[in-house]
Amino acid sequence: MDMVQSNLGCISWIFFGALAGWIASLITGRNNRQGCLTNIVVGVIGAFLGGAIYSLLFDSTFTVKWSLPSFVVSVLGAVLLLLVVGLFTRRR
Image (cartoon, rainbow, N blue to C red; front, top):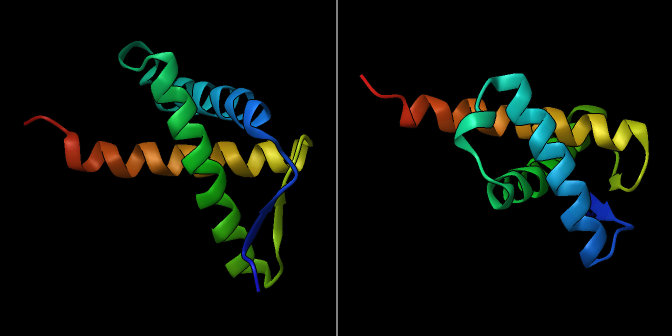
């Protein structure tokens, strides 16, 4: 069983990832330290991470597509990713 599926093409993934990563960086306060490429990468990885967690919690396949629930799950996954990365990169 696939945990995460996608109905997006390559260009759609770039836009979707950029939006999700940018919103996540605003929520976590890392917007000043991230560029556009980092937002795209964080958003795409966050979409898969959020979809995988959703699939594990609700025992169903999650499909990433242009919809509000899909976008919210992707942003939450990206926020989680930024928080975990922040734990390991925090300066003392």
